[in-house]
Length: 414
Image (cartoon, rainbow, N blue to C red; front, side, top):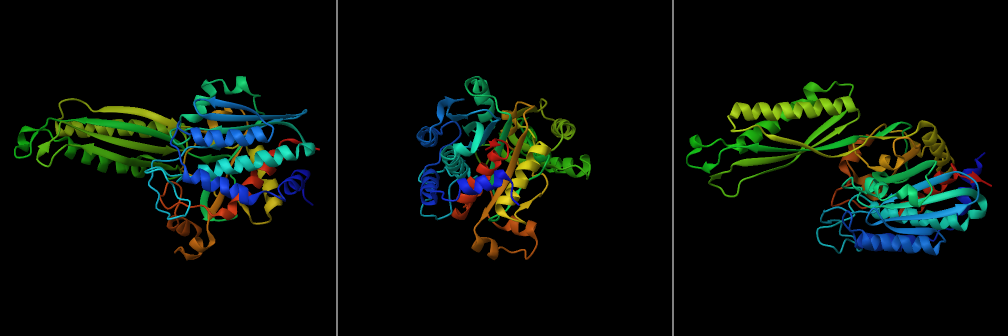
């Protein structure tokens, strides 16, 4: 027997305007916008929220959009979709591929906005079946980690009701039709670090008169590869990536400095601090060994918090999803090494559930090497941030249904 929330969700989403939602998705995909420039995307979402009867607030935190629907006594439930695209050149060849050079919805936020717009309509049309308050958030700048903090700093919870529970979802690679929940840690923290190596520049024909920062930077990159393998316990999960190295202007000039950009992924504060300390130590040590004229500059920059689901909230939402979509559709893959800023909207205390919706087209998944090994096949299909990432349109309606059923699992169902 299905729960009232599941039955109501199935009723409210039985006749979704799928062609209209697919058109919205294609339009958003054609017109991607980078972080804090999501003006067109925000306008499209705000227009739909207004037409559905939501009290709408524009320009929150720059380009953020919030819709509020008060519908009697009951909990306040926040549904969030991020809106920004990435500086990626699209290579999908889709007929609705990006028309903006060098910018692409390579992470699926266009689909997130589409899902939120569909859920907004379905829940507003079925307001006689539930009571409480909906707070729908179109968040800017998730990719840069600025969006949630910016909305809070701009008085988000002074403008709209403070939620009792928060819900969000993210499209992901995997055979379309699965819903990944973890009742606890589900996403890792991320920390950016910049290193400047100071050398002594000069002519390439006289290296003995220089201190080559390029060689020193290369040693730093190599030595950093041992931080995870030799300084982080096997029971812990961590990743260290050197994503950028820059130095020099010409073939025969030894530059005076080199720059490195690093990213750390961690699942505990203790491991994060240990890795930052190791980065500082390695950079200083290699520069000292090379005879650099001064210590390197090591700057800890932007960061994302861990995403930790409230166990009770996530189990409740996962249970409704299992009822709505059937046995075997909900799984617990454990925490991912990716990062999110959604946790900041919870201001450190509000319960939330965050889950994934798999979206790889059946033909792409079936053709992927790896046989029956799920992880091998996941590594072989285009994932988030890939120029080939292209969610299947078959997930448009289910993604609306997950938000609607998740919201009803927390609202008062009449």
